[in-house]
Image (cartoon, rainbow, N blue to C red; front, top):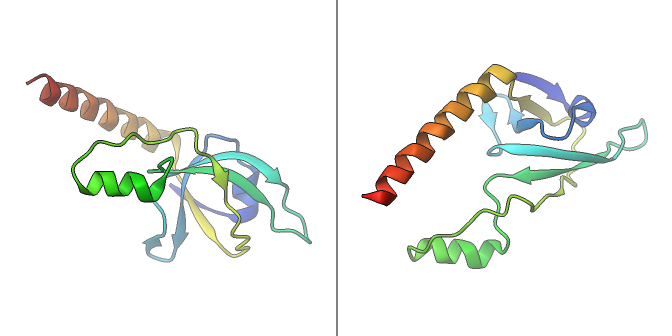
Length: 119
């Protein structure tokens, strides 16, 4: 994991996985960077789209369903604008080896959940 500035994050490709970072605190869950929509400049801190995990199509309705024991699917196409324009915000960017390890953990979780579902 490495820290980058807002300007550096905007220069990274779509698909970059990151978290907002403050000293000693991760402010968000996993975010997947979408396209840069407004380039950074001296006059504009720029903007981009992101997928903030977890994300639901209808947050209030879907979280209510979760709270009463119903299953709700994430909306993996629900990219939204960052829109915060916080020039000083730092971001912790996940590196390839960490993403590879996360993928293995996800594969194991899928196998375990299939086994539970089939029992």
